[in-house]
Image (cartoon, rainbow, N blue to C red):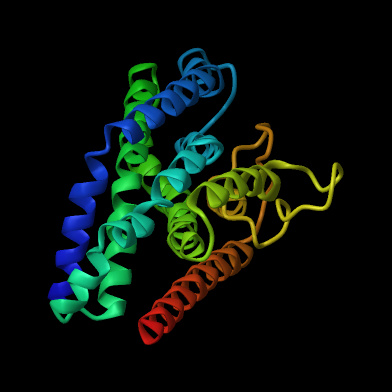
Length: 257
């Protein structure tokens, strides 16, 4: 356990210091805050719509899961490839660190680092909404929405962002992932076959609909708690399978070496 925590701390420190990633999130965050100002801040300040704290928090977290996860997936995709290029994996093997400790530590560390700017944007939005007239209950509601909608999305994305570049070039994964995120989460099935309206979508549609619904707001369709739980279970299973496949692939590489 201590070895996993050590890898998490190391990877978090390395990943969170990437200023290019912070800049990309800042640009995505500026678009997020701008788009949310009309939907929530003015509504809360001037009573244009009756939104409770959970509805506002759910809407904000949903909007936060549009383009920022693309930035996060692209940023996380090179972490394992970088270790391979620098020979870090061979160095870590010499220390006796197990493959699972290495994989889990890197996975949790890089996901936590990627979620840091997302959490910051969530807090900024909540504080801005409170300043515009929202109830203080929006602060804990925003944290709950962050945990229920944003965190599962990045845990799912992070697993594949580590696993897939092990078997394909990083740039190829980044391009394919960008297309997948838009196609699999925000394209209507009336336009083309897509996963966006199924339980396999990671953008938070089901959790938002079950626990953070906002009547009268687009994409606020109701879902049951059972549907939300099944959605989260499928996402967790998918992430676990990706990490298991990565561990088996690294084991195969070691056997060939």
